[in-house]
Image 1 (spheres, rainbow, N blue to C red):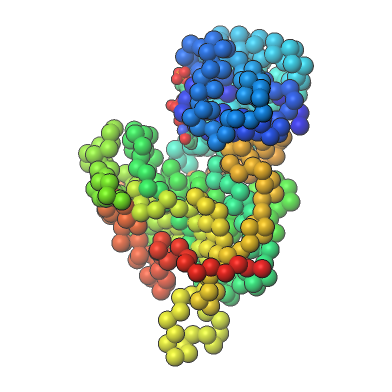
Image 2 (tube, rainbow, N blue to C red):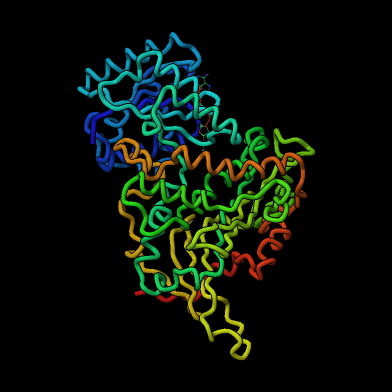
Length: 492
Ligand SMILES: NC(=O)c1ccc[n+]([C@@H]2O[C@H](COP(=O)([O-])OP(=O)(O)OC[C@H]3O[C@@H](n4cnc5c(N)ncnc54)[C@H](OP(=O)(O)O)[C@@H]3O)[C@@H](O)[C@H]2O)c1
C-alpha cells in the first residue's frame, strides 16, 4: 500500500476517539497500514503533539479492544501523530497546516498521498473541501481522497447543492462517503451467504420468495443528541442511508459486481426500480412512530419528548416502517418491509427472507408449520439461519467467512479500503441522489403531518400500526422471539 498522510479534521471529537483511533490502531497492530504513515490531527482545542498523543492513548485505553500488543507497538503508533490547532473556517490556518504536512512528508519520505477525513459537522464539508483546494493542500503529486461521514444533505435539494459545491474541489472518484453499515462483514458477504449453499441458492428465486424484511432496532434512545435528532428523525438518521443500503445490498443482481463501478451500478439499478411513492400515498406505505415512557429489563425510560433538547410537542419520528416494491424482473410483486427504531425491545440488525410454501405443501391438513425463511443476522452477532421444514439450520461459519477475516470492525475495513483506493463499499453520489429522491415525498408528508404519529412504549417492538403494512399482503413481521432459534442443526 502507498505511504500516505491521514489528515483528520475533528480529531478531538466523539467519532475519532470511539471509532477512528481504535480502528487505525488495530490496523497498525496488524501491520495493515503503510510502513511510513503520518497522522495530522486537527481540532480547535489547544494540544501539543505530546499532549495529543496522550489523549489518543487514553482514548485507546477506553475504546480499543486490545492495547497490549507487542512492546513498543502503541508508542510507535502514537509517534505517527502530530496535532495542529485549526479553526476550519480560518483560511490563514491552512498555510501552517500545509507546512506541517510537508515537513512530515519529508521527514518520513512519504509521497504526496493525502487522505482527508472530515469527522466534523456536515455544514463544514464544503468549506473544508474548498479550502483544501484553495490553500494548495490538494495540489499533490500523489493521490488525494476525501472521506466524509453521513449525513450527506438534509433532503434532496440540500444534497444536490452540497454535491455541486464539493464537485468544485474534489472529483467524484476522490470522494469516499462512509456508511458504516457497508463496512459490516456480513453485509459485504450477503451474496456469498446465498450462493455458498445449494439449499439456500435453490430457494433464491422469485417464485419461492414471499417477502423480505429488514430490521434495524436499537435499545438506546437519542443518547443526549436530541438537538441533532430533532432535525433528523429515524427517516434521515437511518432510513435514507443505512436501511436503503441494506435493501440495495440484498436486492442487487447476482453475482455482486467484480469492481467498485459494477457494484455501484447494480445497487443503483435497485433504487431506479424502486416504486416511487407520492406524498399523498405515503400513509399507505409508511408508518411513523415515537416512543413514550416504558420499561426495559426493569429500567424505566422517559418518553422521547422528555429527552434533553427535544421539543415537548415534538413530532419527530423515532420509528419508521415501510413497505416497498422493486419493479424489476427479479423482485416484482415481492414486498420489502423495512423497520427501524430507537428504544425498541432488542438491539438487532437482520434481514429475513420468507419463502412461499412449495406447491402441495400447504393445505395438507392444516399444518401450522411456520414458513421457511432465511435469517441473516448482521448485528450484534453475525449468524445465518435457515428455518426449513420446521428445522433450524445454521450455516457453517466458513461459509460466511469474510474475505478479510482478520478485520471484523466496519471502520477498520472502510479505513483500509479508503487508504488503498477501493470504493466498493462507499456510497456513490448517484446512490445518495436516488435515495433522497425516493425519500423526499416522505419527508414532505411527515412535515405536513399527512401521516399520524403513532406512539409505542419504550422497550417494545414499535407501534402496532406497523402491522397494517405487512397485514395487507397477508404477511406479518417476524417477532424477535421467533427470530431467536432454539434447536439448531449445522448446515454442512
Ligand atoms: N459520533 C458518532 O458515532 C457518529 C456516527 C456517525 C456519524 N457521525 C458524524 O461524524 C461527524 C463527527 O461527529 P462527532 O460525533 O465526532 O462530533 P463531535 O463530537 O461534536 O466533534 C466535532 C469535532 O469537530 C470539531 N470542530 C467543530 N467546529 C470546528 C471548527 N470551527 N473548526 C475546527 N474544528 C471544529 C471539534 O473540534 P474542537 O472540539 O476541538 O473544537 C470536534 O473535533 C459528524 O458529521 C457526525 O454526524 C458521528
